[in-house]
Image (cartoon, rainbow, N blue to C red; front, side):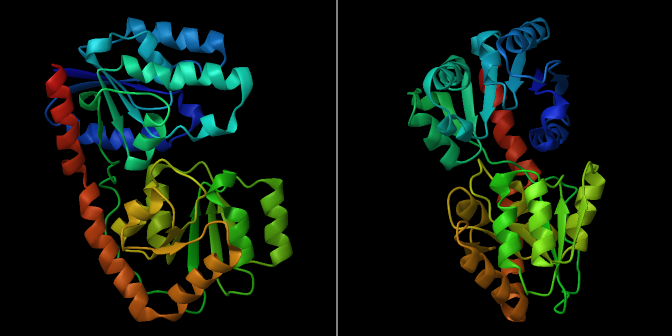
Amino acid sequence: MKITYFFRHPKIGFSIQRVFQTVNKGVSQSQEIEEIFLPEQKSDILSIIKNGLYAKKRQGNINHITGDAHYLLYFLKQNNTIVTVHDIMYYSYLSGFKKKIWKLLYINSLKRAAKVVFISEFAKEQVLNEIKLKPNQYCVIPNPVSTDFQYSQKTFNEDKPVILHINGNLERKNLARTIQALHNIPCHLRIVGKLSERNTALLNQSNIDYSNVFNLSNEEVVKEYENCDIINFPSLFEGFGMPIVEGQAVGRPVLTSNILPMKSVAAEGAVLVDPKSVESIRKGYVKIIANEGFRNSLVEKGLLNVKAFQLNTVTAMYLDQYKNLN
C-alpha cells in the first residue's frame, strides 16, 4: 500500500507540513509513502487549476490531502482520497460571491472524499453546520505531537520568566492583548514569527523586554520551547492548537484560551483565560508566576494529557482509515 500525501506550497506556511511529516514518520515504518508539494501558492482560479492538474498526474493508490487544498478533491479519484480538515474559519469572514466560491472549493468539495478526517470536534462541527456528510464518511483524529518534543527539565525563572509566543505575525494569535497584559510584569517575551509594525510599536510603548526570531528550523523551534518558562497561546481561534501539546510535552506551563478547541485540547494542563480580556490574560500570568505549586500541577497534568496525542496512537488511527480504502 502506497500513500501519496499532497501538501500546499511550502511558502504558504509550515504548520500543516510539520504536523503531517510527523504522521509520515509513523506511517512510513510500515507503508510506502510519497510527499507531493503543490507548485502554485496563490489561490486564484488559474493557480487552483494548475495545482489540480499537477496533483491529478501524481495521484497514487491512496491519496491524502493534508489540508488547505480541499479543492483537489475535484481532480483526484473519489474512492481512494482522504482529506484532513484543520478548520474553515476563513469562510466566516467572507461575504457575497467570494463566499459562495470559497464554499464550493473548500467545503462542498468535501462531499467527494472517501473519508474526511477532522482534527477536532470543533472543526467537525464547523463543517457539519454547512454541509451534510454520511456518518461513515468522517471521523476525528487529533494532530500528533512530534517526537522531537520531549520532556526537558528547567528551573523556572521566578524573577524574569521567558514567555514564548509562536507565530507572532498572525493577529489571531493575540499578541497585542498579550503585550498589554504583560505590562509591568517582569518577564522576557520571546516572539517567533515576523512582527507587524503595529505590534512592534506596541511592544516599544509598553516597555516590555522582548526578542524576535523567525524562519527557524524544526530543531530551532524545539529549542525555543526548551529554553522558555511559559507557553503563551491565548488564540482567538484555531482548528486545534499545536503549541498547547508541544508545550505540555516539553514540560512547560501553558496559558491558552477558554474556548473550543483549545480548552478541550489542553484539558486540565493549562491556565484557561478569556482571549478577548487583557485582564483575564494578566491574571493568568500572575497566577502562574507567583504560585510554584500551581505551576508544577499544570506541568504534571500536561504531561498526562499529551499521551493522547502521541505519534503511535495517531498513526494507528490513520492506518485504519487507509486499510479501509485499500
